Length: 116
Length: 112
Image (cartoon, chains in turn cyan, purple):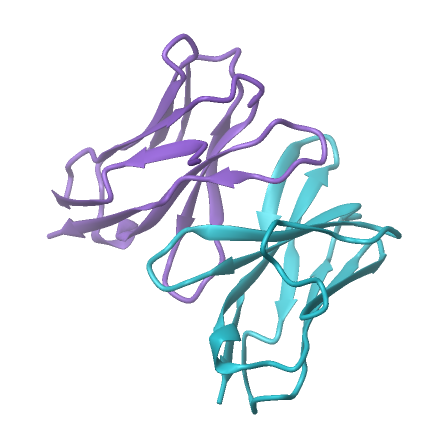
């Protein structure tokens, strides 16, 4: 149980375009979701926390207008990288807080974004 | 400020050995301590987690030891196998809707 499906797994886009990454909770309601960014051989860096129906809370240094997060339903959160540039190339991972009798955090499989 | 300090950065053990990865934290408000395993190009997968009211927890070949007074916790992998070669992250959270805080990770290589 507590599965999060993240799509796409890989995406290549041109500079200046926007890319949307979806994260769906398949068998539970995810009232709180988190978005992380991970550089090669580095740890996960929290970008933002989103609660269903509310605006996302961004970490210091994360551009709100570049990384748009929408959490409009209890099963779907999206991260849109707007006007992408090569420096936005990274591994993006979503996570959902699980509170269905067990407390924990489950992660999506990640999205490798390459901006060319 | 690094809230969760993890060591070692990398570790090489022989097959069958018992790698031990350590983490230390400062924030006494943390009350949930999970360990995650990550393979290249994949998201982290939960291995085992512990709460501060327990000093040790075992699940299969994985054991967490927790020392509340020292604010330290560690992961032991029994009878390690080459398939255990991955990056391991410790983490901590304050509960509620707060996010996990991750250690920097340990790259484990188990050689046959």
